Length: 257
Image (cartoon, rainbow, N blue to C red; front, side, top):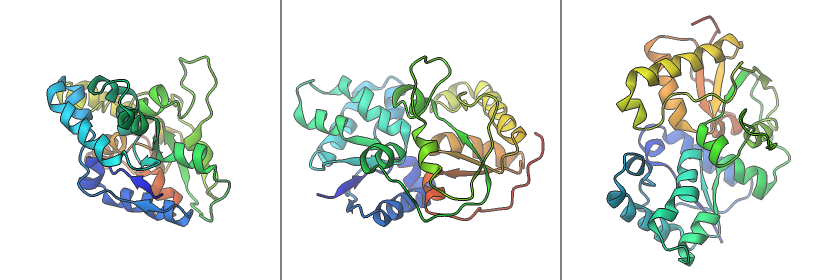
């Protein structure tokens, strides 16, 4: 049975190459991929704003659309976390379609690491890379180790990227700090959000990084906005783009913020 590709709405609208790179990657690895027509937002923006009545039909539509697939892969930790950890508010706990979709929805790197268990990639990316670890990926999906947790967790995103040759890893001082986006938080608390984003960019830039990578394009959308407006020489890339060997969009030479 094909694996379903779930493309978040903001990737569909603003970063379609991330979806294309995800599809290319899965197909290179021999995965039979289906793209269910009619998919929409997972409902997270409405849920975060407290609009539960508006979220419920979106969640039900998503579950109905993906229930027939054995696995659903999404290039977004936040959307995956929404389905896995927050859809329960909109369904009966014994709803078999809901529990199936909840249990079989995977963030892209998680799927590559835990389900496919990939061991090699014929890809080269000879650049200095630092990794932004999103809050949803760390705190809800446990894709890596967060500083406040005593339980050890493998860094699944880093493990997958380590299969790409040529990467020189640069390490920011605060490797698990929030970028400040937080969905509607960036609108309601714009000044705080911008300050947090600038702190993150400064930390990554100071590490010597030329490419800031992440598994969540929502975080990168926020950081990229600041980088472009302030003409900071730092590139942002989703991990899927690195895993298929996309070239840099522009030359980035690290300086201080």
